[in-house]
Image (tube, rainbow over all chains, first blue to last red; front, top):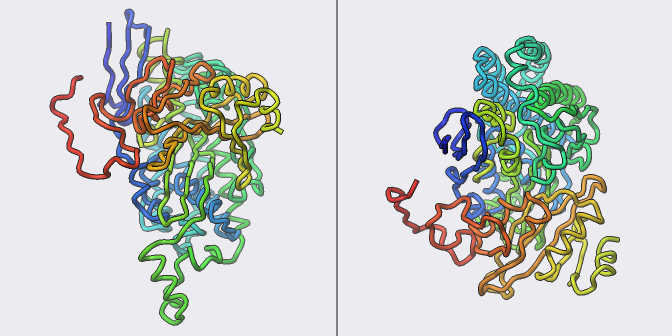
Length: 384
Length: 155
């Protein structure tokens, strides 16, 4: 029997269509049909100036817009050879880890909802709301923040941000305990997840899977450690791993990542350096209002940046960062003009989803739901 | 170093190599790509294929650059392989035999840029509808003005 699952099925988290060949309740073959959310972002990037592309990157992986912003900005900054001041780097780390917590909370809430634990969903979204309020405070937007710009941050951090972040991060570890109380030793949860969706590490690597799924299969590889960016080398955190490689192990890894991210946010908050939030590069970064109205040069730069954008030297870079889902990469090609020649976006969800058939074939249909949740993909990231 | 080792292994495979902004990029003769990838995976621990993509250099010739983004966790090193293909009927060997991960990436390149991959197990469009005309990421493909009627689409 052939079962069509999606693209509107609620547990496919967006618009994924799966075609399952069944024998009774066992999945014999699984195929994915993607592209329902394809909006041609890569093509659109070629029509925008370098700075304008930042707003497009938000919309790719809409659960971690700031990670996308960061990856793109780092790539262009590398092409430009810009030096980003420490305060901006640390603020980027702080907001990125809040983003990771935000994304993992959505994963935990929806994943547990799929498997029948409704109350956890409400708890997760309660905490997520606090994070979205912090994002709104910083950027004026809850989700599509576009808070990072090429050369630093879009705005100075708002008044009272320390208290807001501090209050959240004080309470958060006890909230993670609360989630764990509900799930970690819950017999129903364990029976739905233990031993389900196993795939060997070699297969996962070969299929292009990255991130928490690899760590749950025993590989301690985290880009924040192996290829540190934006001052991650200055932070002290652990890379959690498990060896089982099943849905339960992925759950454990992500729960530990929530705690580690909270640790990083705490360090960033306590050790936040002072100084400017944008690079000293007047040809790239917009001058502040005061200067623009009183200094001729600043006015000229302002006019040039706004009307035609800045030029980026010819060349190409591939910048990777550790997104909540795994390896996110931006391959950016410049031909020396004020618009990108080509932007290729390697979203972690695309590679992770390729591993899906391997994990569900030979198992029950109900397990496919558990596996889907444990992959934690975002269709915007798959289809772009 | 890696380019020299590759050169020693098969001198005709390496066209040139350079390190730009700290990133190593090697241009490979298009007909050798599958063999080179196999060699890099087996002998140099490039266990991961991060992605495959392509760049359209229209109207220059050779028009297409197929880009392979390789990664070795063990060596903590990234490597970029490039192959140039002509604008007329661009075709290159698939590397799905080396890394299964290449499957969807090659389909994407075929879908959006129209480069064909020989020996690919299932070379269909992946993001655009199956009956779509043209390849949207080509430079001579218009940004607006495309009309598509979704009502007749086969399910």
